[in-house]
Length: 88
Ligand SMILES: [Zn+2]
Image (cartoon, rainbow, N blue to C red; front, side, top):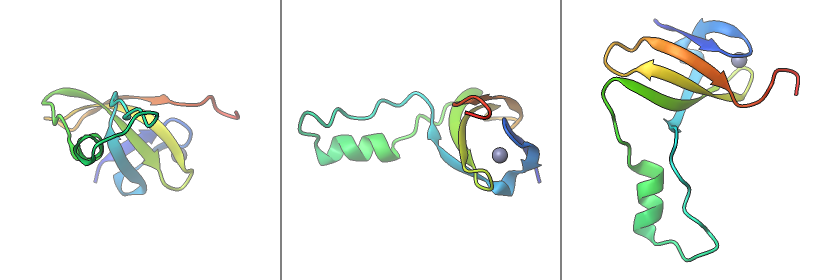
């Protein structure tokens, strides 16, 4: 078991978290027609970089979505970033 740090709740069991995807993806512009291939690429294609990566995670008990920086080789968590300020 690994502990992941929720920016709002602190260190918790990794099983309480849901991976939501790699950070930095750009959603297709829906003001223009979007092909099935472009939607599929946005939803399912992953860079799968080795080393330091930025990802989006959700802590299921508090439902907060936040950024996590990890090393994809060692699985070490390098930090988390809240997408909203506590209490907001
Ligand atoms: Zn939390």
